[in-house]
Length: 261
Image 1 (cartoon, rainbow, N blue to C red):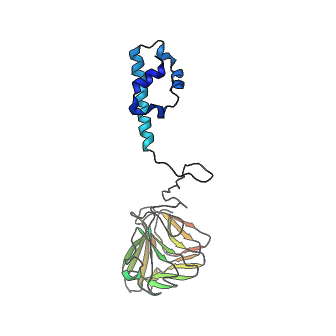
Image 2 (image 1 turned 30 degrees about the horizontal axis):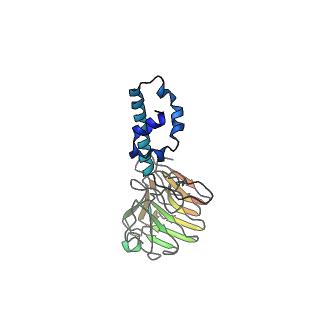
Image 3 (image 1 turned 60 degrees about the vertical axis):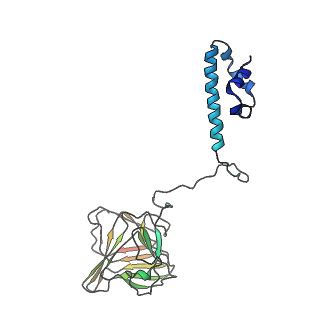
């Protein structure tokens, strides 16, 4: 009996061998040693092992999901890279934008002044977009807020944040645990962003009312436009750093205490 016949007898009809191996004789030619030097029992064991592999391969092939062919190309569909939040990266798990929609002199701690119906959180990017909220001086009075980032995306105008309640201190914390990266500016590490043509101002000392900034992580201040920050910037001794990016002006005039450089 030829190897091909023996193989077909051993494999049996349930594995659809003729579909898996249309040229069984060709395979037999590669395994002539089965008829010379190996016992019948050994041959059956080896052939059985081959049959099991073929059956497993056929089962695996049946689980594959076919891909639609691409015109003029192969069927392999590239997957866009996922960034872990490095400089310039696009992070598919980035923060959610929460846009200011209140008046030009409104209170940042009023929930109705924000597009998501609440004051921005660390997993959100607070945004002045020049459409929902135009140029003006908003205030955060005797309150604190933590945001993933604070961004001005308007192409013109001055956007000011200050505290107007005498003898109080307000605090804005930028980033920290829960922030997954800036989704607004185009750079995931931006903690502050001012678009080209805009001015973003944080007034630290407004008579006896103070507004401080706290770093919840290291990051970038992206001044494509202009940033004027007289607020004291601190980091609670965590060693967080700020890097200035963008072609515009960044002016820091407060008695800053952050220690990361």
